[in-house]
Amino acid sequence: MTELEDLRSFVEVVESGGLSRAAVRLGVSKSIVSRRITRLEAELGTSLITRTTRGISPTEAGIEFKTRCDRILADLVEAREIIGQQGGSVRGRLRLSVPLSFGVRHVAPILAGLAKRHPELELDVSYTDRVVDIIGERLDAAIRIGCLKDSSLVARRIAPVHAVLVASPIYLARYGQPSSPEDLSTHECLIYTGRVDADWHFRSGKHHIAIRPEGRMRTDSGEAILQWAVEGLGIAEAPSFLVSDHIASGALVPLLLDYGAPEYGIYVVRPPGSYVPAKVRVLVDALVDRFGSRPDWDPCLAALSSQRIVAKYTR
Image 1 (cartoon, helix red, strand yellow):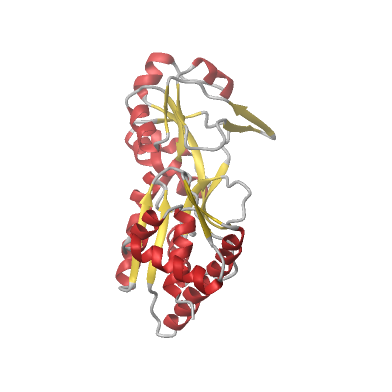
Image 2: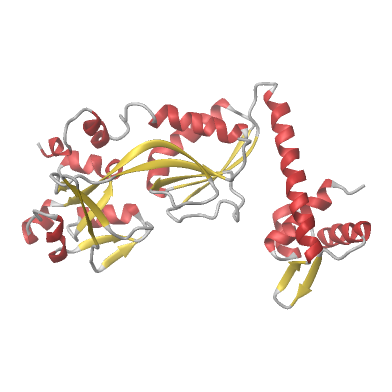
């Protein structure tokens, strides 16, 4: 009978594209992986992979067999989790991707709480502003901020996020303050490249205004954008949770408050499927508990929810 480790090895070889890479992922030698694949092919009576100068790729039979292997291994994981939950514990490894600034500031404490409450839960967390391939990188979930593109992933909205246009007093004293979104064309803008939509969006009554910002400084780091804005290098658009403290201290000034900025969202996204692993479910519950009610974690957003304006922080 085919051993489960043989199936896991075959799946790893196909997904990684090589015996050596699969061996590293599995923590075994390349020769062991090779023997497992050979054993599978002998038992099935067909070739599952082909070796080329570019690496390894599955045969037609291999593609079909991998689909079945994925299903078997997923069912095994689900069965183990269901049995484990009967004892009231959450176990396994939670592979998660979170945005860098938001993750370090707000998600890290939540994950620390999960680790304390569930001693058998392992956490493998990547802090990055890069939009990761959840399925390709074999993640259990990712936290994303903004507007989501259509995909097969399952998304849960956790909380709203508002964008705020800001600049430092130093910059405004030197270049003046824009009075309308159109004025931004004459200003130095700090460009965050980690977003799908490059435009900055505003509302004027029922009218929608989209402006394509221009500037000489670009980065995929929200923290870098924040520091550049504080240093007086330009005007930045940033989520309110990132700039609240600097607005309160006077280091940054909110701009164009008469032009409403669009509301975005904080989402947890996971691979498709009706079954939600316990490790993902406890994560979502913890995030909803922290961010889903009154947004005391974001003073700007709390002010908006209380029908006050962000400008109170300039007093």
